[in-house]
Image 1 (cartoon, rainbow, N blue to C red):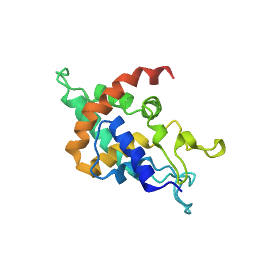
Image 2: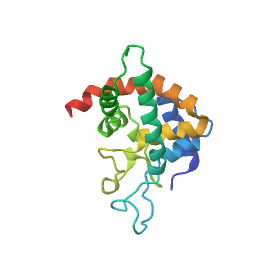
Image 3: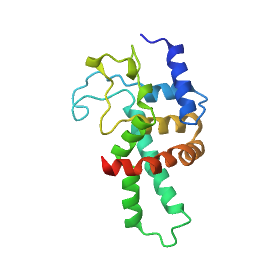
Image 4: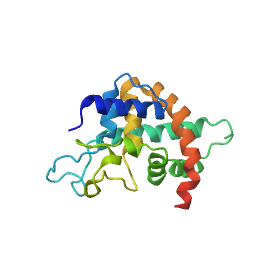
Length: 174
């Protein structure tokens, strides 16, 4: 069993990496916790949900709002067209793109289960990383719960949006 101080040490490293200082580092720990929830009848597509997916659900909604706001508020857009903004937003919120950001920026290395972080996981029990990882979305929600919408918008503008722009072309090629 990982000790809390080890988890918090890693989460503080991640906090630096993503350029956001948490008041409550436990929120970031919740966002990266990748253990499976106990099975529950009639819940989920395949009853295979991770502990951080509820945070991811909230973060997905916040991320969609921030992207829509960014696209609408962009000073280069003189005539706003819903269809064009929708197409741009879809490309920027693409699950494959969020997965690429999580992998290429090293976020996945901070995902953990009860006994280990991703890099130390035994081969038979690797932490799930798939086309749609919940990590970036869960981090978005963790920042929101840590300090509110203004803080998450600032983080989005300063860290996540540049990452989206940096990795957008990688997503199209994969």
